[in-house]
Length: 171
Image: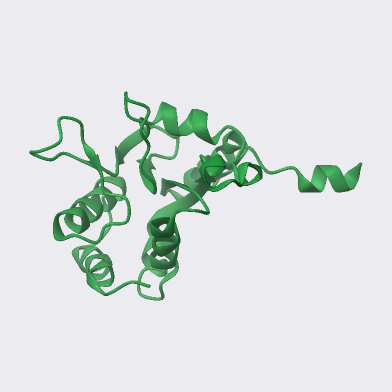
């Protein structure tokens, strides 16, 4: 039935294909944001992306794709983006021990090739630590570095603006 088709969530591959087409047409990079409805930091990150001081910068340089994963942890498996787990695995967002930390962000080029992600190298973690929502100075610095890698045309002023918004109390 038409109603059943309307209810079917769009697959991760389909969302990524749309993002790639838009990124190519607009000469932008792609921000793939993995999150879940039960993840408070995911909500804070979404608010940041949509903040009046940040949204124009993201809109100028990136196509943002949100993929919901591991919703069964919040007992909402129907909210999962079909194929999202396969994509987060492909981009290394699940540790070898099977651990996942959300939100997980991957910056790709317009072809979907990984440029960088939200795993920050640290002295204390043998494997890189996912910054999640960047609220510590070193995580904010890494996030801004990710944005610069993903969008080399990002100006110093825009980078400083993003950093300044992240340093404000969230919530």
